[in-house]
Image (cartoon, rainbow, N blue to C red; front, side, top):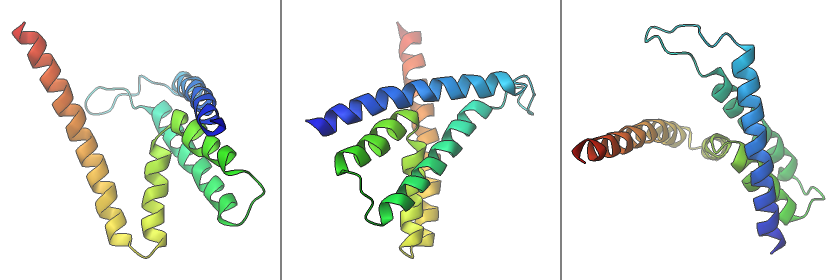
Length: 136
């Protein structure tokens, strides 16, 4: 039960941290910097994702050796806080795990599939909903 409470509490903390960091970075950077599409570059999201990957890498390094921290707290930090902060950190550690195990090519396939399929899923989901609403 403690594990679930720590995941829930960590998720809440991570989500608030994501919101604060994302908004702070977006305000700090000139968000009107136009790309060729005329869209503002998502520096806030990029900062959150990179920082989340750095954090999970640090934690993975700390947890690689027997570190005196109970498993519930480890899960609270990784699944809870970093899961609430960004799931991109999990993507990063999964790709690292494949590479670290000697499966670099599989890691590249995983990264490409995750990005391409993730984008395709967003596109399909958006199109299905907007077309369904248009039919109403």
